[in-house]
Length: 279
Image (cartoon, helix red, strand yellow):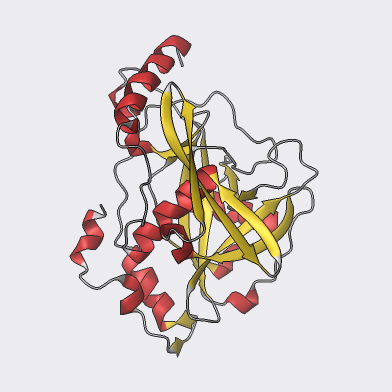
């Protein structure tokens, strides 16, 4: 599943001990070193996005698929995709677990109001790379200083419902106490965190079968509660976090991620849609 990380026989979370060092614990230092070895599957440069899904710049979608499951690279046409990036920012919790920072969108927004998302948004001209995009957006949305985040790797892009290419950027927050959330009220209602391991477990997860492009696929929902607040994490955000947890913890999910026949069906149907739309 993760070829380059298979070379490490001991899982990352067992390689990391809990002693402290300058700039973060030894376990976070070990995690950063190991994740730098991770190489995502090759990306495909042959897609086009008609329009961004969010005028506010955040990336939220009811569904999203790892780009490697789509037939985009087989299409004979050349496309130049619109691009976005989200930040999967990890830190060490008080209990020693790895946790990820999430946001709840403002209830005043006209689209996807109140939904959970990762910090992130569309790429801008001045961004050097996907890490720049993700950390810049995180600063704008929740006040996370990019200097506090160590970007260590990226995952393969995900394609949203409208074929927007979304790149998950893995970053590590070594000094969690230095981060004082300051959500932008125009975009973000609240900032919270969740255990990363939750996204490969089956304890609070449920799924529904839905249809897109003539294919039946699974949507995963995580009903998470913390500090007497309930959050529903699903769709594209859930899909990215399932993949991130699998890569970081080197464990496959304890559930079926997608219908076995989905990939083949989607390949055929996406090619037809791309041809008809003449993107």
